[in-house]
Length: 341
Image 1 (cartoon, rainbow, N blue to C red):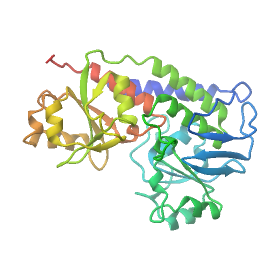
Image 2: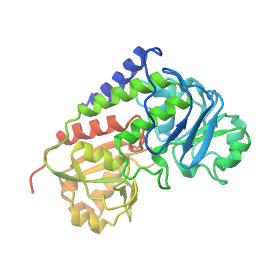
Image 3: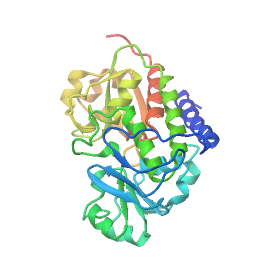
Image 4: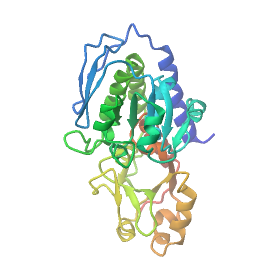
């Protein structure tokens, strides 16, 4: 087992133990974050419905706990599994890769209704009472359906708050407080308030234990692209994870979670480390081959020294893996031998 795998497994295993030990009688409902309004008379340890939330500017009222949930994107599936609400998931769509332990088997057993964004017809055929999406753009006439139209049909909708695009809901930049607020919010929606409180407490502890690299290293977060790389920008999960691990993001000027950056600009910055996003459709090994063959990129110090660290795609979006991703990155970077400039 590699050091990074050990870090990730230990972080997630601790979460599972704390959730198992959590009692509904001794947990309180944490206060919602500043960008998510919650209206409910929830008692300690439980959600009292109706529950009304302001989600990315859309008001959603839950008359009861959702029992048939369709998830879109891996981060939403893993959020529900981490909260102990996986039994309510009737299907998923647009999966980004396998879930980590301790949820691997449970996630693999969930029916995949669509490899990409599900159509409106696919959503309605599943008869969900909630569609929980990782991206705001998943809800459109061409996709899962417009949020207002789904509401009229009795289907509640929820967007991961970290993915809200419009002010004042967009978290710019993303913070761990926003990640923890999302855990709290979703826990309230699915009546897993004690589990959410335990998970947040565990994640705060894991975050406090991360030792960032202290060598003042710069890094490129390489997500996709060939002629033009698509890289981690300055406002989302890549920036938060890199900063927590002690890295300076050369793409921080991009006012978004991800965005395009020319290879010439990358060469000018000449990063010490390259973070490779590994996905089924664009593997880390494929990216290494691309970097080694490019006229510009093969001259990069990080390419010549193979100063790579790998992050699985599902861990690149805000959610229950964000703390573990930062811990993994810090551990992996610490194992790199990098000559000072």
